Length: 58
Image (cartoon, rainbow, N blue to C red):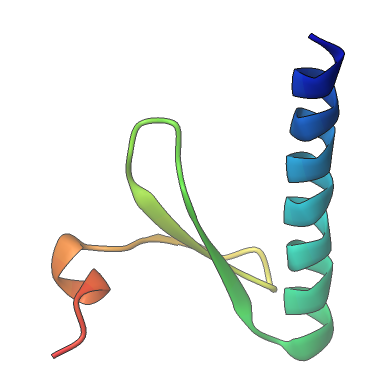
């Protein structure tokens, strides 16, 4: 059980680091919400939902 908790902490720290890097570089992060929606979170705090079509580059 301790390994699962450690993994959860590592995942959270990785996400926190990604947010800091995005803020430092003026970019954004993309993640999947618990309800399955992809989210683009900008360094200025703006949050956008990504449509399924935007995920596929043509």
